[in-house]
Image (cartoon, rainbow, N blue to C red):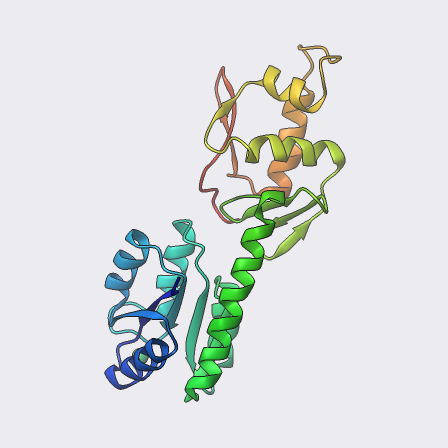
Length: 228
Ligand code: CA
């Protein structure tokens, strides 16, 4: 099936140059020329990739990128930057872009990056069963490695198991007893405060606002945890 690519670029000449090139290579491109439309379209349709210019008339590409990532849209994004925009490039990558292309560029260079990102995404998708992720938090069940955004986090075996329990039930309230039996087994005193202690450890490592206390009921992993 052809991959769909959203092109967000206000300069008509560049937009049509990319659009024609992609179409000629079997992609299904769609061009929009401002950030608000880009957000609308990207959040309602499923694109395989987004080519995002940083200089847009209504809001900059960074804002578009941040809002997309915050809304849980994880489609690969290749940003277009000015040739001397080293700082922009770094900021874009830190803001969740997967790759960048400095203007001016030859179409073949962009095409190579687009193909690479799509291939990596497919490879990642086939491995997905072993990786749990909610927002910017992810757990690799095979390597037992936890990540918060770009950072790798060290978790002890118990912390990992507790995090895994939360990530399997994002947005659901989990009672202390449930967590106790899932992570420690039944041989713990239900009056023990060990769950609370470990939730504290996780909050420190994953971010303070990620796990909410629901008074009298238990704890909940926020489905869109704030990035701290
Ligand atoms: Ca522009």
